[in-house]
Image (cartoon, rainbow, N blue to C red):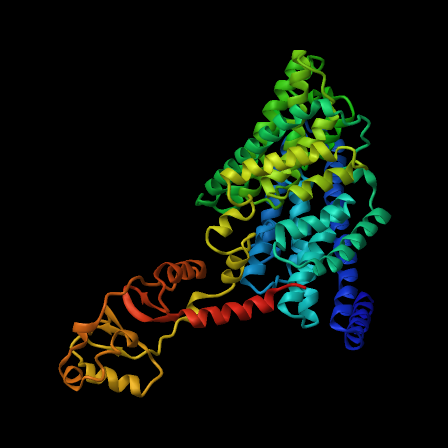
Amino acid sequence: MFKKYFYKLENIIAWSQSILTPKQFIFLSSVLIGITSGFAAIILKIFAHKVFSFATYINGILKLSFINSILPIFGLLLTVFVVKRLLGGSIEKGTSQILYTVAKKASIIPPKQMYAQILTSSLTVGLGGSAGLESPIVVTGAAFGSNYAQRYKLSYKDRTLLIGCGVAAGIAAAFNAPIAGVLFAIEVLLVDVSISAFTPIMISAAAGTLVSLITLDESILLSFKRQQNFDFHFIPFYIILGIITGFISIYYARNFQRVEHYFAHLRMNPYKKALYGASILAVIIFIFPSLFGEGYESIKTLSESDPGQLLENTLFSQYRDNQWVLLAFIGCTMMLKVFASGITLGSGGNGGNFAPSLFLGSYVGYFFAKFLNLTGLTHLPISNFTMVGMAGILSGLFHAPLTAIFLIAEITGGYDLMIPLMIVTSISFAISKRFEKHSLDVKHLAKKGLAFTSNKDANILTTIDTNSIIQTDFLTLSPNDTLEKLVDLISHSNQVIFAVVDKELNLLGIVHFNNIREIIFNNYRVKHTLVKEIMTPSIDVIYPADSMEKVMSKFEKTRVTFLPVLKNGKYYGFISKATTLEIYRTKLKSMTIE
């Protein structure tokens, strides 16, 4: 029955495409992508919530002690099982894969990503993995956008735009924060779009938010009812908080990558690796239960109720009313969050760093304000610092200050904290950017030239494959050839540059037509001059594995129009600067999202 309605809907959309202008069809598509991505976000959130509720119900029957320490073991093992048995053995994790898809795979995302993220992340996070659902939501929304665009044969530009629409709708639905959804799509994923492209992205974000408002229970969302007003006398403390969150963002990013790197290089069966990681995670959660799952409930506890509740059912429950013990507990939890998240994702779980960044930020903000209050130096509004801290870490970790500002403003239901949000996020971003050129998700891809960054030229060059512009049909010369042979070759071809090679194709030198102009009209010299007498060494060479950014850098440095290519140490061909620039112009035109 569902197939029947699905095909009817497809036919209606196809008919709409035939009667609407391309721009009108994109607007219609943005509504549909917004609705579907919004529902996907809701399904994922509810599914994860139900997984945990079911596990809690089972525990009510079995009455196991410290169930929260045991559940992540089942969660990671089940996630690995689903990936191995149902998803072909692999799954792309994190928003970095969207960046890679846009840069290197023509914005084509496999269809399985429309459901794979929902299945795996809900098991990981729902059963206590210390990660977030937002990255899987983002990937799911992007997959809907990409596959919709493929179904209706839209161009690369439109596919990329609809990926942005899916991303914006996913974030908007997850937080009831449409502005944050739009800004996340622009700041983190679509770093190079024109103002006119905002319209479909805004439509999708609004549609996703509307779906969330109508269908999702507010208890599942991260939202606050802030009561403390902003006081400008506390601005110096917000400046200090901005500095602290900037450096802690760096601490998180670097240690997360270390943990992931460690697990990536473990030569273990996937199930053994999951069991190994989950066992470590279980011990951490046993001591610090707040690290269980997304952690949004503990954020609300810090901000709106009695933080002493965090010590209940822990090894430190007897010190529930001791503020210094509570502060030490929060500080340790804060510093261990990166390891809990890294282990969760590195050992086979699926999730993201969006929720962990909010968790960490809230704990940093609370710790800072509470510490100063306990020392008697001042009396800071703890809930305000808790929420502004979230923005600081989010800004520093994702290099997305605008997203951080408006997300916190939207989930707190007002803009009274706008000034401290701007102060903290800008300082945190500046510090993080100073020490980490790229954000956590982009760093490993940007190093290899596999993702778009804020550098527009580099983004376009990233999409060009060096091998595709190597010209391998150039005629070559041997060092003992005469200039007469060279003149004959020039007269019968369009070639102006020649590689001089030996029998083993070792590059010995270069001969350019411009360098022999003065002697080609001297018959005596033409007949008696050998190529080896007039060849010049190559200023630089290119290798097929070089990125296009590196190739253009070599052209700029050498100021030549051709550079030879060596493959396995042997002459292979030439790359022309003019050809490269022509391809660059074509790519620029095809990639500009308007």
